[in-house]
Length: 450
Image (cartoon, rainbow, N blue to C red; front, side, top):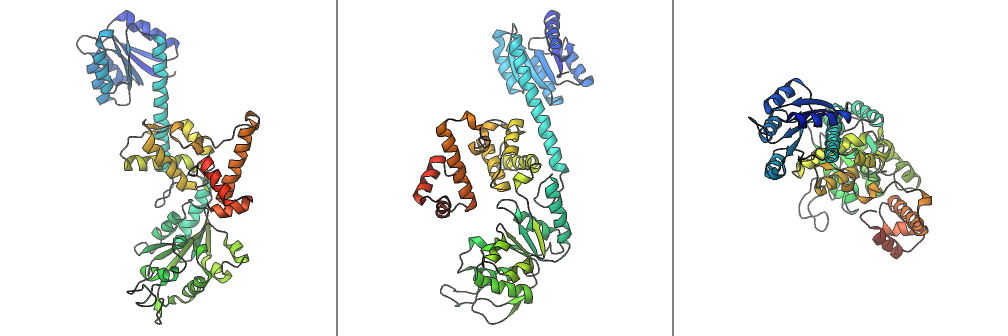
């Protein structure tokens, strides 16, 4: 059976005619001759859809749907009305009716309305299941997942958190390295102590030593007062060094000493300062490759890589996409004060098939954009950015020559920009073209999409 439908009409011929049509369409049908009989029927039977006439004695259709909406909010409703009673139908729509039909009925139109209602009900059920999955998903502070790949990662995180070992977290940008670092801290014995995060790639090279270790007043031009560095701020707790591969060699030496001796001097100072800090570092670079090229000290690598945790990219943990999407929908719907019930199966399918070069950070961005821009209470394919819905390439033979050339050009541009971290000069060298040509191509294909 497609669904359970209750037909309410005080006219027997109309009631039985409509019931017969719905039976032929495969629906399970209940009949009621009055509003009260309908209410009694809903109490004792499963009803998915209510179809009610407006003009009935004792209790009008409008009164009935108001009662049903209050007492049985999951029942979808359709009102039948005479041509001259459109105002009642409009009021019924305001009270929660899905749609209305004027008499004499157009049965084909009714069939279309029923299919739309059933699709929406199925969508609601699927999103309820997604929400249940999110609630059942293993929980670490701020981390949502269902995949076996992440199950292995978080099992290692839980075991690592119980020790004070130095940890190196590796993974592509946007995979959630800082969230994993925070989870390690929150599950450790240091959870009540400070967690201090430093993005090493965001600090100019000439300031990173001062940022980490602090400086004395007057130690250099502009040092107008004493500055306490991040190591001192994190004393007793956890210091998270994000993108540690960006730390210059001159500072790596001092960083190694702190890890070995647990003491350092501020820039411009001579007095040793002792600290007790757990170090959790992260990088999206291959540090072993950086060691071979002389950009990262081997002794420092082995100091920070006591326990290594590698976070897989989102494209290798597809099972996490549905629960992450539901998590972000709930988060951003609340943040932007919108009523969003979920995401359509087609849109979710596009997300699952998308390659996500920006990983979870990109997924969050996509969902927030969709939540903000959608005009519906459900995210559809139309609400997704073009790069998501066009990620699957059309069969080669279906493309014209110009489209084939453009597709290949854009693909190579995307690859070069990703491999160089968005550096236009480096991408130009990789493709053996001018930087001016790179800028033209970015403009041609939309720099934001690249």
